[in-house]
Image (cartoon, rainbow over all chains, first blue to last red; front, side, top):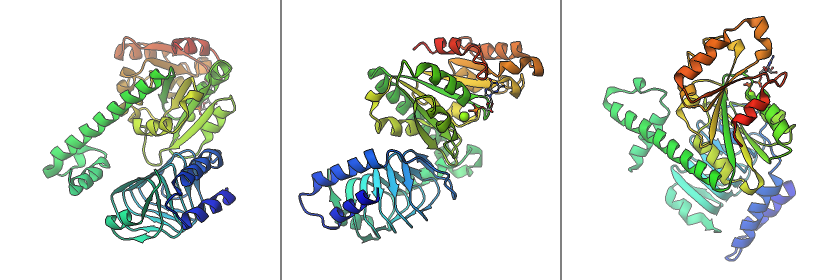
Length: 144
Length: 238
Ligand SMILES: Nc1nc2c(ncn2[C@@H]2O[C@H](COP(=O)(O)OP(=O)(O)O)[C@@H](O)[C@H]2O)c(=O)[nH]1
Ligand SMILES: [Mg+2]
């Protein structure tokens, strides 16, 4: 899994206009084959709703009324605020997902801070640090 | 819908009861509650259409903690997994204990941990089936979070619902929970291997179930000895 994640990280750190198909394939492959066997372990903390498979790396912080899954990987030290819903996505380390943000089929890069609320995002790579919804649209890389 | 109203609705959805709402937002609370219930039922109907179209039979099982839902599912999957490809969706507050028990009998499982919610709803089931290759399955079972109250608010889009009680819960357990029996197709009274010891009035339990719902099939079982598990499987009309 680590190796595959590294590969994806490398691709999204150097996005080109024509990487869409490659990203789509990498994400799909990771969720289908590498995440498949991830079963929910006892999660100590505020209990969110999980639908398998969900993989939580160490020190993930999760708010109230959060729905994670199916097919979600969350990296180290990432924080998920209240009312967030995530499916079919990879969230890398040290990221922040703001309140009531809904992600499906997305890749969120390392250290990316989505410091905004109430937004629905599909089929995107997001890397950066945003404070408003408008900023999200600015850094958005649609791959589908 | 304005952002503000959306947030207000979001907040109200969390309220357990309209009794808690302040008078000035009471109507909004009631409207929201209706909307949520309507959305769930609509989605449940869509799920059922989708599964039917693909020729997949589906059954959900509700009942109190410890009634024997998982034990019954173990017996059923053990018998049926040679003939059918089975997916079992297990709902629990936390852990995947039940999913692990069922997986031993050659069924694929998906665990849903509901955290603080006391029942599965149609949205949970839809998220699972939308993201699964449905060609891999002939039969889907859902084990709901253990309790006899919340699940009656949410249809899940299955063909049939089984409510499981056990004689260790006492002969009043059906009488006290009319809603679930009204919306179930099959009532299972489990742990009849203990009948002699406990002396529970099982005739009263059967009468209560049929009183609430004349169409309900009542089956007395023991998941321990396997008694009447075949009768139960027949009643699934696969
Ligand atoms: N004697 C007896 N015990 C049973 C029967 N069915 C289940 N049990 C036991 O009751 C306990 C709870 O069963 P379980 O299947 O986990 O219940 P669930 O919470 O409804 O899924 C377990 O220890 C089972 O072994 C039965 O028919 N007879
Ligand atoms: Mg169980």
